[in-house]
Length: 493
Image 1 (cartoon, rainbow, N blue to C red):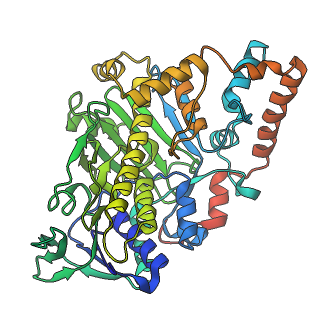
Image 2: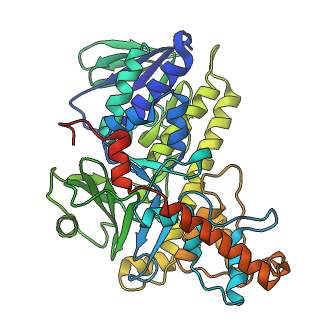
Image 3: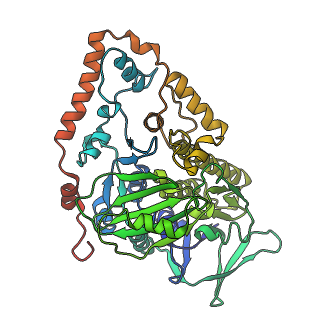
């Protein structure tokens, strides 16, 4: 299984090629096939903290990477209008307050409110307070949890240079056909329009929504989740910056979906996600262009999608990476993360003497579990809402949700508890922030919080809050820090 062929470039293809070439060295021969004539989606510009680890695993210098991709730092997502149309809340990275082994911090905060401590839950989260004040710096011992806003097209180019330096061979061309072995049913080669035949032992499908290999040739099947996540359309457009970049993404709800705003060093990424049942394409474009800041720099990029997952993401000698394996709308910035998870999982299971059925089954189970857990977290944003001001929101509020999500919501509403299962991506703090932000109020708190005396409770809460306030006060302004640490070179801004 030495010859690995990556079908398709873009973020998924070059993340895969770079990681395998850097990790495996001479043990693998990586060939990537892509066509300059085929565009990429290119809107995965907001990320989550695991990408920091991914880049470190590949030995990437952070400042060089950020300079090349005009990246800024990201401490979380500001949600506008998701609960009742006039509200806002923040989903931050990191941890709020200080947990006890028996109960999360939210139980102490809730108990404290019954004793007259009325400080918002937000005040106890360092990343949240720093984000809203527009401050950032690297702290000792990874004291501030962060991710990036980046230009995904430039990220792909950055990784391409790295992968080619590590021995990856890029072949320009469009895939005309997928040649299957008549006996085994495995993929034997990719046939290009030029007539060139690209043989391999293992094939990675990074062809995006087209899924030319995993679905077109191997018929993996697809589970449609649009009955839970009804948005099926998006428009992306770039605008000039109108002020210093803030260290967070914005997700602004509207009557048929939501809008994103992502600040980079050289521009701002904007987009509208909506359900075509309730808003047509022309009206969506007018709404987006009427609600952006700064000069429009690009032609609108229109996308149609169906949220869901490939039933099998590893079939025979083919593995789906990225959009070919399924799609999750970018509400919680998980697109690049799912690419990363699939690549690292594949490297851990990389076959040398042939495809092992047990590896395939385990890979498919873990990939699906990742997507199901992210799916449930996204559904939460739509289901837990008081909005009834449009048909779209009434549909969301009335829909049945998966049992896995219903149980999590009921448990938190009744007890204030959240349990993380099977290494799921979103930890307790994420679920607590979003559920409370969406209006789910726990009816009780853990009795262990009642053990603290009034004086001890006051000391505990005040100390945590003061520590956050003092740390944030010592942080520099985010835009200034970025400029000094990794400012984009002249001519790229």
